[in-house]
Amino acid sequence: MKKFQLFPEPQKIAVTGGVYTIKGRPSFVCGSCGKEDYSILQDWCTENSYTLNRESAVISLNLQHDSSEKTTYIKETSSVTTEKYTLDIIVENSRPGIFITYSSRRGILYALATLKQIVDSGGLFQCRIEDYPKFNIRGIIEGYYGPPWNSREREEMLCLLSEYKMNTFFYGPKDDPYHRRLWQTPYDSQSLSRIEKLLNLAEKLGIDFYYSIGPGLSIKYSDERAFNLLCNKLKQLYSIGITKFGFFLDDIPKVLQHTEDKLVYEDLAAAHISIISRLFNYLKNLDPEIKLVVCPTQYHGRGNEYYISKLGQNTNPLIDIFWTGPEICSKELNLYDAAVFTSSTCHKPLYWDNYPVNDLEMGNEMHIGPYINRDIHLYRFSSGIIANGMEYPEASKIPFITIACYLWNPEQYNPEVCWKHSIRRVAGEKDSRNFLVFADNVRYSAIYPSDSPYLVQILSSFIFECLYGDREKGFAGFGKEIARYSDAGEYLLKGIQNKKLFKELKPWFRKYSDGIKLLTSAVDYLKNCDTKEVDSLKKLYKNYQADKIKVFADVLYPFILAVIEGEFSTDKRKAVR
Image (tube, rainbow, N blue to C red; front, top):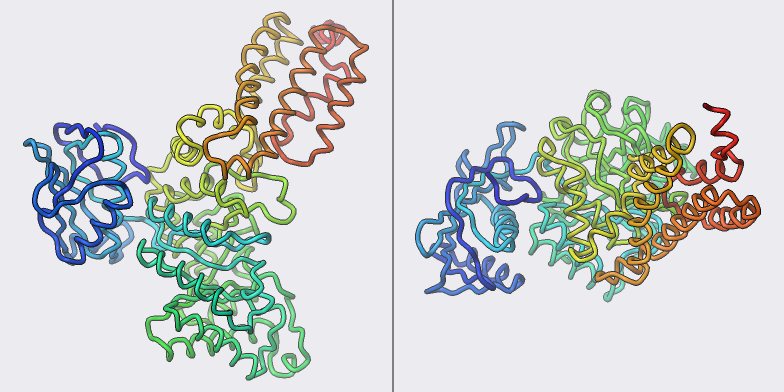
């Protein structure tokens, strides 16, 4: 039996023997590995405050390269991969042996990420792990409307992606002027240097870095000069080492705007097919290894509409096409919709999943709930999933971890277990208990259109006792339950260990605390049966409604309104009996 939960869950794990307790920071010796492998191990040990010696240490670490079928083929997906690894831990003597078999650098990094979780638990347990991802492309995009993340925040995000075995990062913030409004303008040297630094870190961490450009608002598709400006912009980025590009045509008018374009192309789809083909040919002539991903103008729906069908059928099969599913923010992603898209476009969808993003009209929501409503076999019918983040990078990490766990091993993914782990990881172990009480009331989003599941149970029980059961028992039970909610609110508003997370979530902490005070006041009003206090309760309710920050979804409002209107009065109780 496993000693503890690993995140993401490995595909296959067999625990076969004893446990070796680690005291303090572990010391490793490289038993067998090449020069490049030793450098990877050295970086890993330095970053995690472990010790690596060439000659003597307690724990022996051995790396073996293997590019045979055993280490490169995944039966479930019938695909060849470079991300598979095996991790064998042998605990027999006073010096445990760790053996990693891999086919690429990324395989080593994934094995070491798993090993770190085991080591940091305080001990090694004898086991054999055979592990690989189910989804081919697994990552995130900085693609929201709002203030872009800064360089430090992006670097920290890349480290988190690597820790949880994501392999892709798309740079494409809508409010970076060079990405969209000034698409034709080359980067200044300082801005270009920042992107290059980020690219270098991504490569070190085994993450594919995509630079995305969105010229669709103003580009004249028939203008050769405009096309050359586009190519020169991407060539500048290629000069610093970028070989993966996103070409975004989303959130633009759905018809041709320029008179010159209307004379050349029959419609928007034809113009887009032309520029995508020309751009892909240019990039491939520049470097055959270059990859291109396109976000179409119609990026959601049934998947068999005119525009997307025509675009897909006339786009090179080596180009992935982004798709958000049935809706812009899709409640679910299922196999039927994926099959329709594939059949109509001749491309498997690469999902741009608009979760946890909370921009534009969703700005008052905080999307930190677990990743749900994605079919566990979706990896068989898609190229992968790229999740769109919020402008709040620290809060985004909570759902991102759950997304990473789903993408690696969807069949074994447990949303609630993984969510609690992600909260402990981001909010910190010390603050996680109170944070979980809060977070249970901030689940609302497109993928989770309800909220406060446990509070709903508390209120349902209270209402039943008020109307049909033991009224005093109802008040006592409510008081006991709500005390935990009140304590959590007070605790969180004083501050938490993760200062960045506290700064991002403070408005939601405050609204949560105000909601509990309102709820407590409403129940006290019912308990005391003092009708003179109704005006005070109405004022509290009005002030609470004026703050548009969304906590508790719509759970609180109908209950408070029912209290104000006398739905739980003693007269009402007599009437329903």
